[in-house]
Length: 507
Image (cartoon, rainbow, N blue to C red; front, side, top):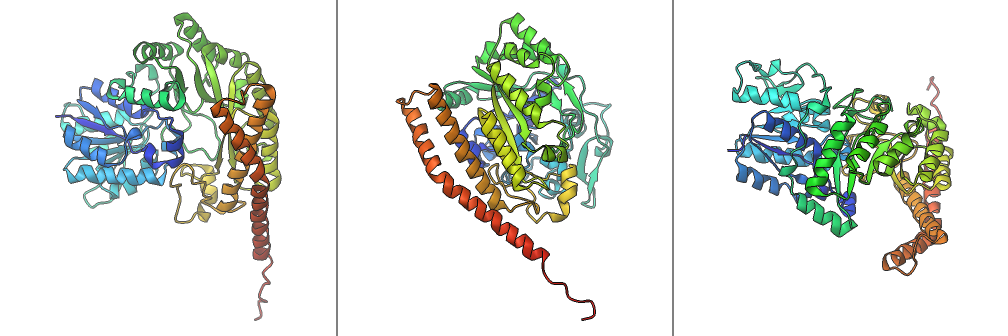
């Protein structure tokens, strides 16, 4: 009998935008937990929801493996899991019910479960692990199975846990400290993954095969909208040597063409990138990769040159806004000038740049939005990702706007773009802004490629891009007019709400 069937509730199929993009990665956090528990002596199996069509495949896995315990261990390195999307929460509830219907105890670990453990317990979970999960899961399993005589005797003795007491009331134990020496962790349990299925999808859709890795856990910065339910403000990093050894193993066994380093921020520790580049050159394993970083970090010493030496192809930067006022309000800790300078230096080094843009932060005006659009026009990053400010529990931003939240406090999927609080403009405005920005950006990008000679206009795929450019240009004017109309309607509504005559106190 299998001791633990690991799963997670992020179904790519339930996220239309990401399903269309089809760039799937296995649940790395789940794989770390599986390898950790296997090393502790448990028999483990994996249900990978990423490529599954529905929760029915989880039910089939339960019937196939007959596990003693079902553990939904979310991939906390996947930013979409950290967004706590409603589709995925409902999937977790369904998966819990399926396991409980078969008499299988359920343990859940993840960002959403950490923030909303009561909901998961109410939907049948026996235990919720709050925060980083490996150590807590190990102690809990030893207690439940009686595996060790020195194991805690009751759930109350286990740090980082939530459960229902005998009266059905939620109980939480003391928080657990995070793992500091990440080099001691075993490699992810890659042999549980259908690697060839992932490879086939990547090659068919994109012409290359990409694998995910992580070098760190956590982020020490204080962006006041960024939720950190798993690692808080702590930041721990694997050694450059340890990461390079894993990359060498992956290249030997799976031959990836590309790596996605899924860290919140890669290379925060001083000189880490330089050490990593040295190891890559020593082992002769240079592989194109993409990662996330910050504008200020990239300007430290020779970091950009070291990124290039290590194989960096693309850096996604949390630019957020072209307005310094908004960056300061976010406690971002970066300057607009640093975004400009790092973008130019990265381009000089031949490294592609993606900008994450965030609209709708409290106090943002149309002038602030225009500063962001101006930044995009002037710097023309290689790609952009657009979001609106998203209040999640545990953040200063959430506390600031929590009184304005309606019943819906999470997005349904990653393209929802709903304003969950009373922002500067309503949801319809930001969805239309998303359309306008993408139309202008895509048209400009294609036109620049044509002018520079980097795009062959007679290739079939380029003909489609050129046709799309024409469409975007033709429809951009009407899209902008609709955006202006939405803004005007909001201004008029705000004016009416602030100019309602007051009733005299003596009436």
